[in-house]
Length: 468
View (cartoon, rainbow, N blue to C red):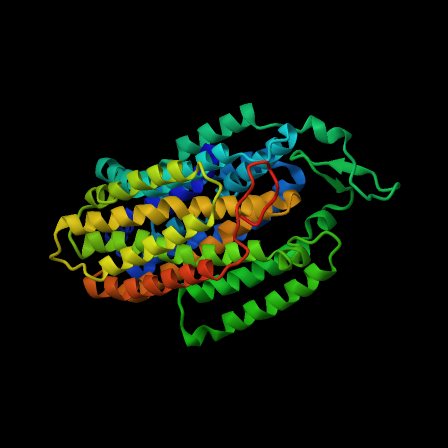
């Protein structure tokens, strides 16, 4: 579970310190290398809820093994890529390949909770969040070390041994089926409709594959999301048609889902789940700040401040250490509101400090920014993940977890676009300050969304589903 779920964050963050060396090696400016970030998030934003729905229906094993195997293939392609176009293609493969890890982990946690009757897996969820946080924050440091030893191509080659290890563990440890589900029948099912079991513990009506998966709904969702993300990648009025396509596809998607017997995304249930919708909204704006810092600040430390990729990674060690400590300590409590509020304040304070940075600032100020960002880094993801676990329909845990990642990656796409627009051809101090204002606005919005959300509460340790 842990190894599979970290494949995505490690590929999301390790590229941060590789963007400048790749640009120099392939003769590409920052505005073009930004596609290495956008390509992975575009693929992952689309793939996470789709693969999550497949996991809800068929169980995690097959989807996990297939997707994780693709990660190894992408690692080979990236390590041998002759130009930026092929490298972007490798990042797309990585995006799709890493889609199964996190939804599969959340589905397995839910399945085990149902099997044991203990619907309060705080320790497991904390371990999952800490593992993802650890990799997300240590990614730039690991990337800098790999680049120092073997060049930027090693950041892609790393995926090969990780994928092999994850596939082997999946073959050995992932359950093929849940024996408990074999005796269960779908509540309210018609007598002539024989139920078929799902490995994650639930049941589903037997029918055609297209009906069970809602393939038309998936296609319309893909059209809506791709159009929207392509527009966000390079915000400009000349691309208004992409926004129009996204709106049209979204309208068609809504009509389809409201009529479908087994919708890809049950809009009626989702629309009535205000706490979950609020969580998705918070995830979007939180990741605008988080990924703007990850990519924008890291690029500036290399180009605007003059650090090497390895030293740029070292500069984030304070964030890495504090984020882990904050996650471990706060994971003992099921309270969510306090974590979200403190995380929002931490983002705002860090943005204000960034506005005071310059090319001649002392190194301790860079370390101070990283240290402050460790607080929201350790709190926000844990709180958002736990919220989804307790707020989502148990039968759609994997797809709901996938949607959380989708909203997070939409935020990352906004961050990527803001970073490219702020820096242009060079990551200088003026561009960093422009990006900091964007981050500050998103941080304030995140705080307001938390302050005025009356649905936030406390997830009971007894397993009662609460608006956490």
